[in-house]
Length: 198
Image (cartoon, rainbow, N blue to C red):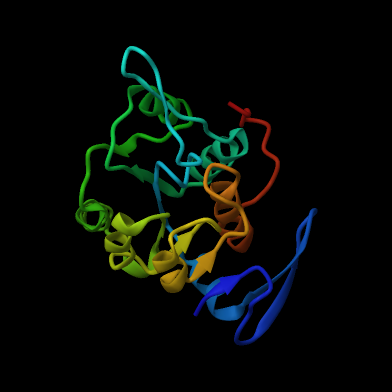
């Protein structure tokens, strides 16, 4: 079952959001209620996929501050959050650590192996895991989770297999979008005073 913008199947439910009126299938809502582990790809999901290569060889990435807020909210609400990437970045690792995310896996060619290991260690069922990816290497991770999601500008192969396609593109709020939906569904979305926009 796939949800994207104005395309919907199954029984419908209306949820009010400050900015938009969203329709969701009951099936997807039920799945979001069970999420305990959120896993994200880095480039193309938490960033827009573009890299600025500096003269010293360092790669500069741009990240959305609202995604950072939502990531903190998820962690402080008790959800497990992991980021898995085929690349590596010390600055990204430091930023994620400031957001409360210690599960950062770099230089990982097969993300499903890490996800399966996390599920085993945390004793979380596959159906309670959500992954968001944007490109062909992420199809492997789709097989390891119960909910497959991607940004609006993901590769066609991911768009075809995703349970949820965010209306937001990579690096432009897709992480915030899916986290907010999970937390709202679980009754955990609020405006806590102990979270900063960093």
